[in-house]
Amino acid sequence: MENIRNFCIIAHIDHGKSTLADRLLIRTGTLDERDFKDQVLDSMELERERGITIKSHAIQMRHEHEGILYRLNLIDTPGHVDFSYEVSRSIAACEGALLVVDATQGIQAQTISNLYQAIDHNLEIIPVLNKMDMDSAMPEDVKDQIVDLMGCRRGEIIEASGKTGLGVDEILTAIIEHIPAPGGDPGAPLQALIFDSVFNPFRGIFAYFRIFNGTIKTGEHVKFVATGREYDADEIGVLKLGTEPRDELRAGDVGYIISGIKSSREVKVGDTITHVDRPCQKAISGFEDVKPMVFAGIYPVDADDYEDLRASIEKLQLNDASLTFVPESSAALGFGFRCGFLGLLHMEIVQERLDREFDMDVITTVPNVSFRVLTTKKEVIEVHNPSGLPAVTTIDHIEEPYIRAQVISKAEFVGPIMKLCLDKRGILKNQVYLTSNRVELTFEMPLAEIVFDFYDKLKSISKGYASFDYHPHGYLKADLVKLDILLNGEMVDALSTLIHRDNAYDFGRRICVKLKELIPRQQYEVAIQAAIGSKVIARETVKAVRKDVTAKCYGGDITRKRKLLEKQKKGKKRMRQVGNIEVPQSAFLAVLKLD
Image (cartoon, rainbow, N blue to C red; front, side, top):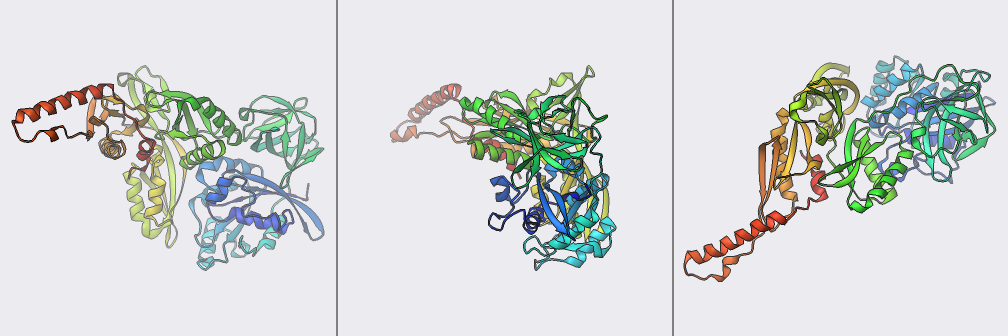
């Protein structure tokens, strides 16, 4: 066990985690130069394209140091705030972490958030200054920031470059010398933490685990504590570039188990594996069901594809345990699913994957968060969808989820950022200058306000420098109203939103204007209205396409023209009663792009 080192790489988005992991794999000989491609651990085409890591990836490397062969288990983690639960489980499976900071950008919000998680788990932190080969690198300034944040010595910070391979040997030496070997007793009852799972269409689910105590052998009867299910360990092994079967794994090892599991609900990240005949006393702490933050309806464009969509989402859920879904129906869109996502990026990724991997055309409704409604009978109802709101007469008050948001930016952008957050009903809680020109702002604000376009606006007003991180902060009472959109008096439930009363008029008017541009002109007039209850607060009209029926009247009495126009008017009225309006997909998406 003293020759094993378990560590993960944590950093903000785009600070070069995956590139550095590539270098470590090449340097330790785990990967041939021939097989090398950028971001080798990122298995999805989508991850490569966007340059982000969506799933954690584990791999074992072997490295000789001073004549001794060490086994290094590396877990590469995602950097985006939407995937922070995966990061927390990866951190729980390690004894040490490489904290990667971009020398051109300095410390950002997710860096701090991940660092605090690692410190909470008592991990040994090795600070690495990445991208030292860039002309815009500011090593001295960024080192000051790291020293302020961690309280380490300047000499401990390793200068590195994932692109050129600078500093990789020092990183490997630091991992072996500073990160402690795993503890644990191979003779104790089995206690292993599941930190990830992957679906394989032929063999079912591979659960990745780290053993804290005990030993597991192939063929043993094991139990997953949180779900209570029992399985046989058909195959266990370690993770190299592929999977390598082993007969037994002992305390301190990181590996995988295959036991013919077909459903992702049976494997939960953060669960504990133990033996059925000799179980451990207690499960490893920190397990919680992932809570979705943002909800949206996903509907097939063609109603006949409903069953195909269900199958596609179920398969996607096998690879992405944090996606939740329940069936729902909408008067405007037919049958579909109400899906829960960790955030907007997660929602976008799921949409892309449905399109690419399963070739599904879908319509996504306006995303919203879950609200708590307290009725006059003192009942609490969770509402994920505006159409699920009880009658206004039975509502005592509505509570909405709040978050605690940390924004780190250059000092010159403090004014615009404050204005943005205050416009979004935020409350400034704290302001700390990390260095002379970098400031950390802490806000409490409603989650519903950041769902739409907050992140995009933050990036544009700070010229891309501000970074953002948030944590749930409970529920608070709010003055919310349900805003309905009506087309010719018919409600389109897919466009309904729950919104703060102060913003309702402005938002309703902007939606009406936007829909007027997007809804194609019909043979008759289309009235677009925004209403709160029975009170219409905004209206736009799409004019009818009209034939010039008076063209054949040359001169003569006005009554002849009037007669023809009246005849046309009656026809339009009749048409309007039987006609129905096709709302294009772009109209549902336009609501997200309102500025």
